[in-house]
Image (cartoon, rainbow, N blue to C red; front, side, top):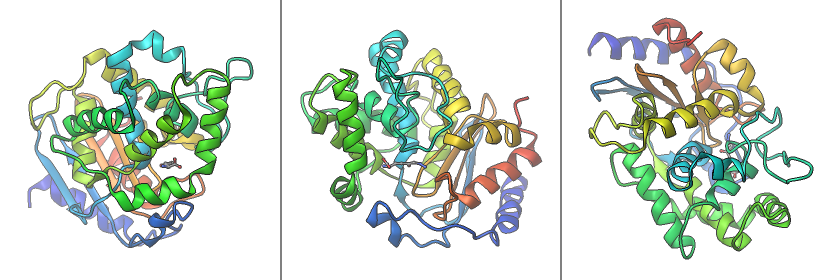
Length: 304
Ligand code: DON
């Protein structure tokens, strides 16, 4: 084991006993996740992927898809068009809150559910499959391999996703969404159901860290400006109503998801990802937060 992997393994074992919280159950299929899974991965500038723990366990990307669909929307439409439909302000509210501007109905930011649905609705395409295909291509380019939808999680979320449907109807009532509500919301459910491993998330984070160039494949995925815009919004909004304290403690742009994944970006240095299904009250993984916090401390990654 090389010294960095040894350090990752040491941090992993230090955090392993912190098993508070419970896997998400409002999407029924997520409740069956093995709560003991724990994994950690780091990718550096030369594209070397280091990982420890359950690094081959697959889980659905959930909200960690949001920054990458934002990247696609920014690349396709430009910053002004995106900002016309979704803000860039932290909401200070939970991820599923109705955080819309009173007059315009514009969601506070693209990292909460309402803002992510508005962002997905900006992706061009004739139908759900067409739009999903573009999203899958973009996220696969970030990961450096072809990603797939977990149909069971998708079906489970679609069956129980009335709150997201309600948010989408509100967006439609304010003309924040142009097309049909069900196309926007089903596209969003499919993007959340893409399967990844902690290694994929670390490569995706690293692609943002290195200005939009995937350090494993060497391929430019998005412009440097798009990567910077995405990281800016992750910095202020990526951890929902924990975003401020996260920036204080860890000091890195980051994004979490309800299946227990978390990615963080140390610009020009590392992409970092962690996975463990038990969540805290904000919907962030207890042990993934602890792993990245400890790594930021040990590697001196805090940006400020
Ligand atoms: O829309 C939802 O509720 C889920 N598909 C994603 C939410 C999520 O990951 C929030 N993150 N912690």
